[in-house]
Length: 160
Image (cartoon, rainbow, N blue to C red; front, top):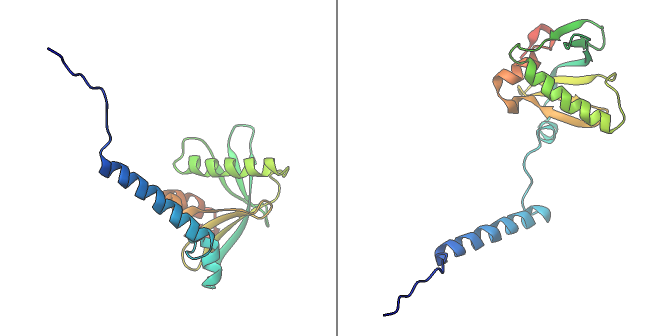
């Protein structure tokens, strides 16, 4: 008596065909974008420019670390303290996280925190934070309404 014991595991042919089709589709779409047949994902700043969307409110702001761990947000034009960010207050963690990323970018370019950032509320309702020294911009609405509101509070009158 002979027992046949087979350990061969086969992948169903339809699964292999599906995987191959998925890879080929991804490669085809990537190629079509690269050669210009398909347009890239919309870039908010480009879309605003093409649609001639004007700024509604603009404020130049700076961020200064305080010895006690708080961060002071100031209006760059007037020197007025806009807000003091302390740990544990809702929204402050998001602002501090965004600014850590911006500071890291400036550090990589050898730029300090003295130049102001540009916070802009656009006529179409979008809100952006731009660092003109590095060219980096963050679309704040993409992080949800609460996080957007944390930055909108820095605008004159808390415009949102």
